[in-house]
Length: 206
Ligand code: SF4
Image (cartoon, rainbow, N blue to C red):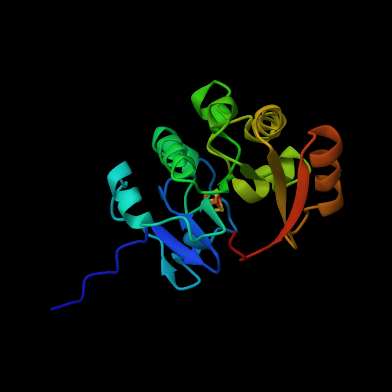
């Protein structure tokens, strides 16, 4: 009898951080994404979910969150596509006393939900890492293949709105992707959007 595939992890620890994998769905179809190359593991953790987890399943998978330096919404999917669940879990984490809750996001939630979702995150999300990914729309579309028009402008608008509500907003881009000008991304993030900027290394989680 064939062994059944390993179910995807809802919560997975890397070093002192706990990561939460709420969905495998995405608004983008990034060409550099490991899942589009058949790679569903991150540092040995299988992340291909066999179902959309419920609040109870996420909380059960977390267990005790207090030993972790931070808890991060970040899986092989876009966490804000499960926004009500994300906010419920973030609230539960903060009420449990977790010092730092971070969200890794594509920054397209305001485009999807047609409202400023960053205001709803205030108090529950301490830090945002937003994938700006490129210095212009053409480069963004080339690498991220968004399913909706206006995604690059929406991502920038999300970053700008988030700086009004959340204490730490960091725009990111992947150093080494062809055509991506990291210094120009930095200038857009810092000078135009009022956020911080971090160049990330392709393939590195967190
Ligand atoms: S948004 Fe993230 S998970 Fe989704 S396709 Fe892009 S890199 Fe992959």
